[in-house]
Image (tube, rainbow, N blue to C red; front, side, top):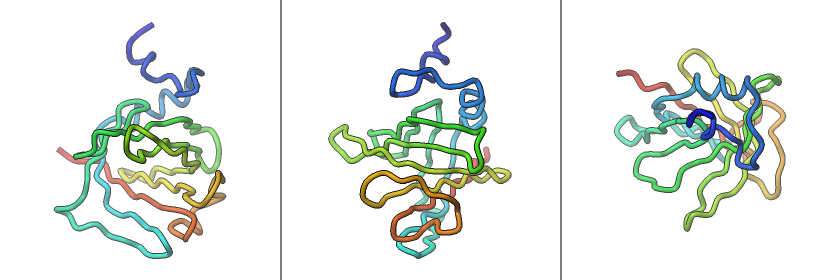
Length: 142
């Protein structure tokens, strides 16, 4: 089995669907975090302070952070599209965050539930509320 496909296995040990593998391949590359909405406030990030997220399969590395974000699930066949990320909590620990995402041109919008327990956001209408975080990433241009 090619190394790329091996690296695209879901963290639970189940292989990702063909659609999921294709979606992750289309997201591969460097993305810049432009906005992070939380607690009901839109937070633009100053250009000099914007971290770069390098997406490579199920591993997403953030500049100046050794503990990557891990994709636990991605399903581009649903509306809205589903994504579950294991976000770093330090000391090699991660928290599973259920979410949704959409791609608009060169922008990737990810809405994650950050309240207590697990719950997937139903839509983008309340993204950035007290229980959700909305990250807007833009594909880095050369």
